[in-house]
Image (cartoon, rainbow, N blue to C red; front, side, top):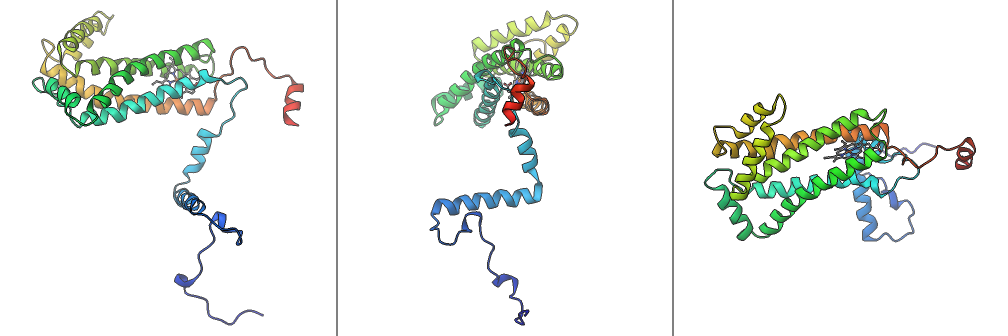
Length: 267
Ligand code: HEM
């Protein structure tokens, strides 16, 4: 027989049980409760955004047999970029891109700011690490034949990423505005000027005036901390989309599975 009691008001109804509360006798520790909180927060966000489908599509992919440590070079490059972004933001809080103050602000970061020398060192060495990693990653994709159909577009995007990475390094080098960076940039800008067709225009654009000076520094700073990182982040997004969409290439020494192998794998 149906109950004749009036329904409880919403506020007084017992809350539904959390994922690890189902078994009533198990003593639940603090860790379990925290884990539940995490799960229910993710559920709450996912119910409203459906982001987990996308995350699953990117992260839970089948990878070819023989995938090895060389395949981590792309992610390592991305990690180097993220580290550069974080340390760069911290440096930008103290750096002053004016010709008279730039050198002094870098000296201040190095000698006075708490952990300033460490953060500056990470950014400076990180840039070299990123350039080395990007070349190693490019070599891996080249020697594994990953530039071939259907990944040609990802190779082309990779070339753009390489150019952006090198330009980030180049524009960053001027920022301390000491003798070394001033003359290195003078040489670098002149080398850019020797390029075919666009060389002279590039030279004028980079110098931003009759000689390397105040306007060059402002232009390099804008390129270094705004234009190039944003362009690089957008291109990395496109690069990773294609990696997730097309999957990665098997190493060239792996043989294609015979029907027998496939049958064995399936059982
Ligand atoms: C900022 C620079 C770059 C980042 C962050 C990056 C990131 C990645 C990541 C995470 C992957 C998947 C994992 C792997 O295979 O390592 C990948 C794959 C790939 N990358 Fe890059 N990459 C960069 C630069 C380049 C360059 C310079 C090239 C070539 C000119 C390139 C060509 C490729 C190709 C062809 C693949 C597909 C590999 C395959 O299918 O096996 N990437 N990249």
